[in-house]
Amino acid sequence: MLLSTSARLISRRLIQSGTRRTASTSNAFRCNEENLRNKALPYYASATAAALVAVGAIQHNNSQNATATEGLSVQEAVNAVEDKFAVYWPRNIIILFGPPGAGKGSQAPKIVDIMGIPQLSTGDMLRAAVAAQSEVGKQAAAVMKAGGLVSDEIVVGIIRDRIKEADCRHGFILDGFPRTIVQAKALDKMLTEEGACVTNVVEFNVPDKVLEERITGRWIHKKSGRSYHVKYAPPKSMKKSWKGEIDTASMIDDVTGEPLIQRPDDTAAALKKRLAGYHNDTEDVLDRYKPKGVVKNINANQGMEDVWKDIQVSLLR
Ligand code: AP5
Image (tube, rainbow, N blue to C red; front, top):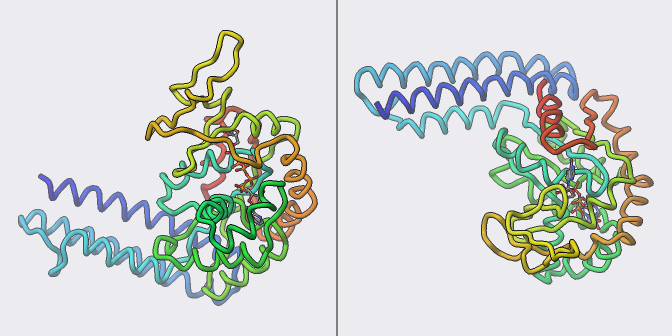
């Protein structure tokens, strides 16, 4: 019983995995040359065949009351197939693109859930460096508080190290990177060296005028990065005085019960500078990816559930 459930789950996982990789192949076509096209098809055929063989063998062994496939445990068989995908298939490399407060950090964990690839937020990584008072953190702290951009060298270095980690082997979601043309060029170079490329850019469109309310009403849970809003996504514990003022002691994380905080750069003054940086330096990055056909524009000026629906559509290929 347990085994046949495992086999069904594995079949589904492998089939989903195969479907994803079929889709990724079309991105390989978009961003790479003819030789990758010629390589991709045979790999698709062999990897899918391997997955089906693995599932078939596991199911056969189940009917024989066995627990393994050719000497492999169920988990090992799945790992072996996943290793093949990791070696031979293009990775999902997704950029979440939009101004401060557009909703990138609110939506990213849902993409993590459905795709199983990590969110790499340069903002979160820099805030962790500031909290740890590391050398990078000391250099970044004042610039961040004022709403400026940290140097390209620092941010590119952080990303270069992070994407080499094992959890990035099937892909990753970039949140807050690249923010300048220099960063975009550095990213593309790193990816090209590994035979990969950016597969999706999800552009969050929100008019500037709605961002101030979003940013100044935001509270976050520092350890997890979970984001709340006094009006649009209040924590369950939030209380207001009879005058309608927020009781700051009641701003508690729903999951851990720990206090929430407001970011030092979430002020109206710092937002002005962050928005200016976005329009002057960051928007140009889109022009680099538009000709590759990977940019999907979504309306982020609607309820969070509707934004999420649009994102899911934008990720289908
Ligand atoms: P970073 O942390 O990346 O901040 P940001 O890009 O300014 O983005 P935010 O986190 O402010 O916005 P978000 O889109 O994630 O919004 P959220 O989902 O929380 O960067 C911070 C700083 O680090 C930078 O200023 C810079 O100094 C430095 N830095 C980082 N990366 C760098 C790089 N690559 N190069 C150089 N420097 C770098 O939503 C906001 C609020 O709105 C929340 O309260 C949420 O609940 C609410 N909300 C979200 N969606 C909706 C909705 N649809 N309707 C109503 N409310 C909503």
